[in-house]
Amino acid sequence: MAINKAKVAIGFIVAGALTVVFGLVFLLVGPVVMKDQVIKNTVIDPQNQMSYTMWKDVPVPFFMSVYFFSVLNPREVLLGEKPMVEQRGPFVYRKRIQKDNITFHANGTVSYREYRRYFFEPSMSAGNESETVTIPNMLVLGAAVMMENLPFPVRLMISATFKTFKEGPFLTKTVGELMWGYDSGLVDFLNKYLPGMLPSTGKFGLFAEFNNSNTGLFTVHTGQDDIRKVHKVDSWNGLTKLSNWNTPQCNMINGTAGQMWPPFMTRETTLPFYSPDACRSLELVYQRDGEMKGIPLFRYVALKTMFANGTDYAPNEGFCPCRQSGLLNVSSCRHNSPVFISQPHFFNADPVLLDFVQGLKPTEEEHGLFIDIHPLTGVPLNVSIRLQLNLYMKRVSAITETGKIAEVVMPMIWFEESGYIDGPILDTFHTNLVVLPAVMDYMQYGFIALGLATILIACLVHHRVKRSRSNVTLTSTGEDNAAVSDEERVKGAHDHETKKYLKN
Image (tube, rainbow, N blue to C red; front, side, top):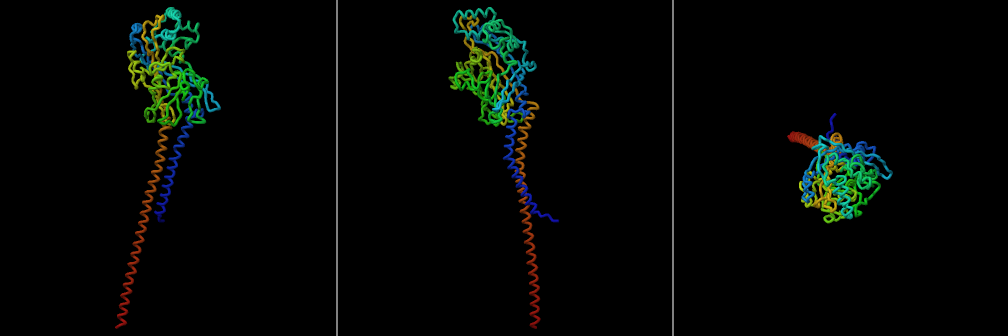
C-alpha cells in the first residue's frame, strides 16, 4: 500500500502547530502556576510543612560573633588622653531561635514569642570565655553622665557609694562575666533600694537580658488574605506604634520581624523591619544582584542615612537628641543610660568619631551589614547584621571616678549576627525554586522550537511532493503528444500512397 506523502506532511504540519500552541499555552500558564506555588509555600500555614518549619524553628545555623574593644591605656584616659583600644575576638556563640505561644487569629494574623539562647563555640572563636578584657564600667561612667545635673551634694554621695562598693571607672573581667553577668554589690544595692533602675535584677552583663529571653509578643500577617502582607508586623507587645521617639514617623513599626519578607521582590523593593534591640524600625536598600550556589539573589545594605543625625537627614530628627551622624541614641529605651548604637568601627559615621579613639579601621567588607534575599520568595539566603555598642562618657564634677576623661563616644563591643542556608535545605530550595523553573522555561521554549521545526520540515516535504507530482504530469503529457504526432505521420503517409495509387 503506497504512502501518501502529502497527507503525511500535512499531518506533521498540524502536529507541529499543536506543539507550538501547547508551548505558547505553557509560556502563559507556567508563570501563573509558579506564582501560585510560591504563594502557597510562603503563606504562614502549618499545612506548608517545609516553609512553616523554617519559620517556626529556624533550622539555619545562626551565630553571634562578639568583638571587644579592650582599653590599652585606662590610666591615661582618666588623665584626659585619647583612648587606645585593641579589638579582641571573635568570641562566637551559636544562636538557637524558636517560636512559641503561636496563636492564629481570624483576621489573618498570627502571634508568637521568639525565644533565643546562646551557646559558646570554642572551635570557632579566637579565644575562650575565660580571657580577660578591659572596658569602661557602664555602672560608673554611664551613671555619672546620667547624674551630672543632680545637686552637687548628691553627686558627692554617688561617688562615695562607688567607692564603698569598690567600683572603678574601668572593668577588667573575663569575657564570660562581661557577656552573661558578674556579681556586684552595687548592683544588689541598686536593685534593693532603686528597683527598675537596671535592666536586670540578677547579675550585671552586657547580654544578660538577651540569653534565655524572648523578643516580645509579635503579631504578624500570615499572607492568607494578601500575600503582599506576609510576615509584616501588625503589632508588637500589643502596640501598633512606639512612644520612645519624638515624631510619629520615627515611632512607626514598619516592615517585618526581620527574618523573612513578602515574595516577588524587585530592585525597587526595600527591606523594612522592626528591631526590638534597636528600639526602632530599620530599612535596607538594594545594592546589587548576586548568586549563591546557583541561586539568584539581591543584596540589601544600610544607607548612610540610617543612623544619620537630624541635621544631616531631617527625617531622623525624631531620634534626637543626637550627636554626630552614624550614632543612634537609644537611651530612651535603655533606662536613660548614655548608650549609642552604630555600625562597627564607626563605619558610615562622621569621620570625626575616629579622631577621638585610636585603633579603629572601618571597612565595608568587614563592618558593613547586609542581607542577601532570594527575590522570588523573600527568603534570606545569607545574613550579616553588624552593630556596635558605644558609651558616651565625660568628666562629671564631684564624681571623682570620672577623673579628667575627655568627652568621647567610646566603643565597647561590636557583634555580628550571621547565618546562611546550606545543606539539605539549600538543595531543596535549589531544586524547587531554581531547577524546576528552569526546566519549565526550557520545556515551554522547547515545545515552541520543536513545533516550528516540525512545521518547517513538513512544509518542505509537502512542497517537494507537489513539485514531484507536477513533473510526472508534465512528462506524461509530453509522451502522449509524441504518440499522437507519430500516428498522424503514419496516417498522412498512408493517405499519400492511396492518392498516388488512385491517380495511376
